[in-house]
Image (cartoon, rainbow, N blue to C red; front, side, top):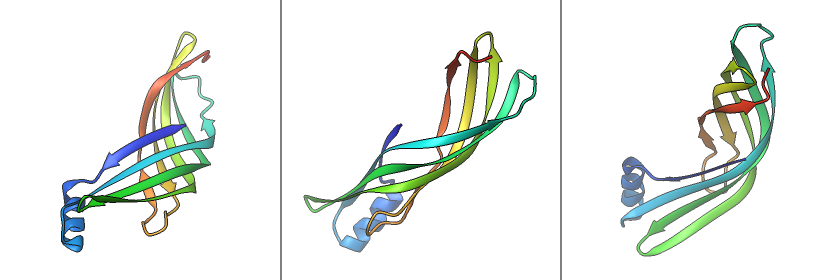
Length: 127
């Protein structure tokens, strides 16, 4: 499961403001889940690389505010992801770091959404 929220950077705000002729802001919210397969090397080393990929679904909401009013577009769309990472095994736990490329289908009137999350964590019960 994942959730993210972002506001427009100044370049996008400037572009929207010049197109619409009034100060304009944009916000994007994403909530989704995916099912992934992981392939890890069978090396006996403490640090092991792995690849991960899968498919899922994301609910995307894009809000544009201008002139005191806000318009929203929202849709639930399919997504796919592909990435890789490293695990570092320690006595029954494993530390991990991974990066994935996530691609979500377009919401009506807006282009597809892509992002690159970096994740770190601990897995318990690791050999």
